[in-house]
Image (cartoon, rainbow, N blue to C red; front, side, top):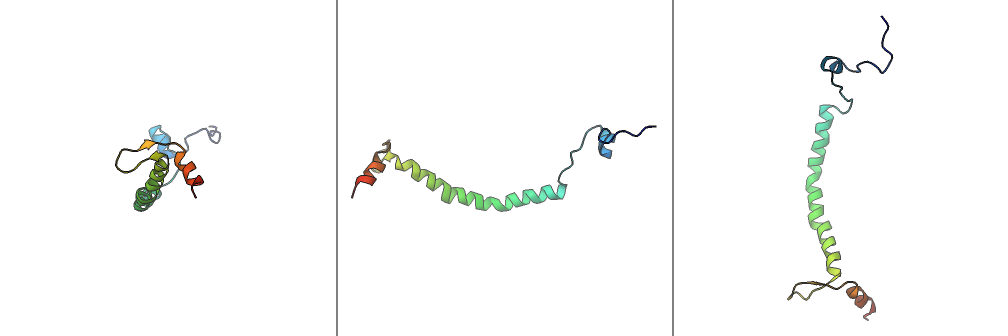
Length: 88
């Protein structure tokens, strides 16, 4: 009986038994630790989004608006920036 050429037969016993290949990768413990790390970082990520990224993005939005707090904002384009640069 000839042995199969390397790489042609089932690489893992589970593949030989079930007929399905199992991809070598991280163990269940490693996957769990990865998820625990993501959950551990989640409060920082949510805080970053809520207290830094959102206000910064909203500020950029407001730069292009003409708004006096009494009426709804209207799009002003670059007029606010030009006025800021030309005013003493």
